[in-house]
Amino acid sequence: MTVLETIQYMGERLQIAMVVGSIPTAENRGEIRVVYANSPAAYLFGYTTQNEMEGLDVRGLMPQDISDRHPQMVDAYITKSEAGAAIRQTSIMGQWRCLDAVRKDGSIIPVKGNVADIKNSEERYFLALFTDRRAEVEKEAELQSAIDASKETMAKLESEKEESEKLRVKAEKSLLKEKKLTGQITLLRQIFGGTVGLVTMLGMLIIASWLTGHEDSKDSLAMIERVLLVHTGILGSAMASVFDSRAKADSE
Image (cartoon, rainbow, N blue to C red):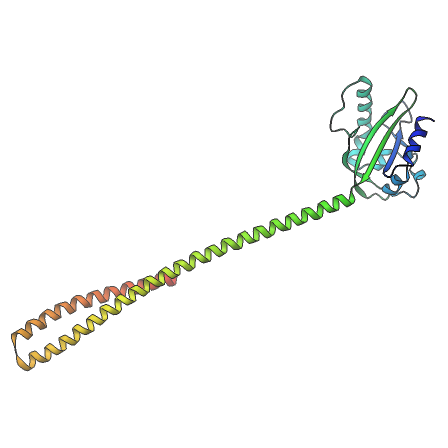
């Protein structure tokens, strides 16, 4: 069996896509045409039969950006391999790489590919294996979507947490203000009550002084008048403080 016949025998038994290409002329080493494709390859690339792929320029299976550079890449690879130079690690030669492929209808699909250089003294073939990554990419997209949704939910929860904390702080400040105002009002009531008591006493002493004409009553009356003036001043200051506190609380 020839090298190609051996490859074909193997390809018919593989469950993954295999495309084999060769260089038709020595003058143009960058051109590779399909000489064999198995049934999984025809299905993957959207062709009716595997024979339909034979004779195709392999660049037709690649996106435009790779297709334009492919002849130079192939020529550079052959030059290096003949010189025994090392092949760069980013090359698809001998390594599985994730890449895009073009189907017959022009649609682009994600695949994983690996290319082997098979040659002897008379023949040289490039054997490419491909696996379909569409289901894998779809799952990756679903996973990324779930991750993005989770991040969005976490951000929303964090925002709600911050807002809740602001409301809690605001409520505590309001409670402290209410307590302060309540204390001021209580003090105001006490001062007012004391003032009312002094006014009552003052009234009684005025009546007693008027009825008896005693000097003691007049002295007591003068003292109560002074205390009443002090209480009145304190009452006014307390009321002003309460009103100022209420006004500040309302503005906040």
